[in-house]
Image 1: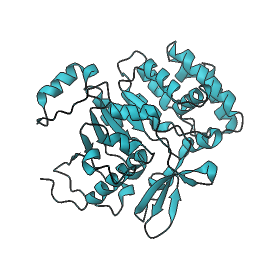
Image 2 (image 1 turned 90 degrees about the horizontal axis):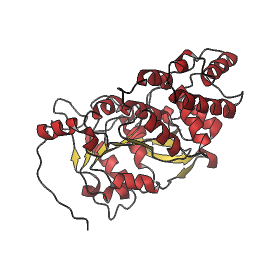
Image 3 (image 1 turned 45 degrees about the horizontal axis):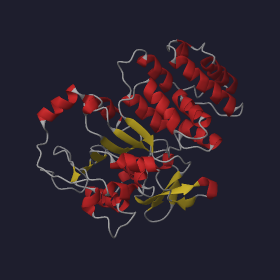
Image 4 (image 1 turned 90 degrees about the vertical axis):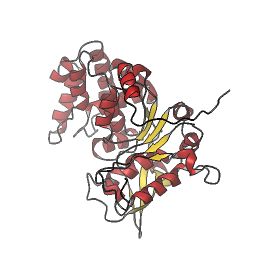
Length: 359
């Protein structure tokens, strides 16, 4: 029979920190709603304290080489997934630097199609310097997936700027009948990922941002201000649309395994990162807020301590209100604020927009 026990704790707790650092395999199960690269360095440091963190990452990237993969194969984006797997991998593992270099390698943007295809074939055939440095059995597994990708892509796929790690994960996705979890499991074991990384949903959807004062943008790359000029109007609403249905609005239900991952955690963190495309985007599927509300653990929001182009015109209070609105969207009448958010963690040295001094 489940019971709920509350007690006062000290933060920070030096003794608990020392204990978790000595035995990170017994560390807390911290769940992050996340996307992008903002948590990469945090994730690399976190493995010193726990090997049980859970990362629910977004599959909505629509820029760069991810866009080419999504268009060609009608699939979710895997770039954030690849980045987080590598961030959590055991860097002391024999051969890790070579694997990391291969997964991070991008094909040139200026080479001809024939040159790009030749480099991909060299990787798949095991004669490229990057793949030659990788030890077996990892090398055989990677070559197998690159051969699958080369065959599936055909001669008309645009390889300019393609991430080799993304191509490998794409091949595993296609080889597993368009399921992403099997290939994530395989590479998590091979590089000894110290944590759990899951794609939030396994669907090819896009982000749609309704702007204040009218107008809208479809595609994450248009929202982030990284590949295009930054926003000049605040975002009024973020939603998901299905390009296969003429960009009709959709709200897919999360899978049971995602619901179970949320329910089993010791702490839920809404972390720093692009406020809309990394954080709010993870809360858009149906069932997320309800699962969070039914999980009895601390829930913490950590606002950005850096400039976020997506938060133009937003005060800290508005960010919290927006976060709560999406967390309670499953059932606003019954999901209370305290069910989905307990704390907002602030740095007293930071001047947050529209906020009083944290002290």
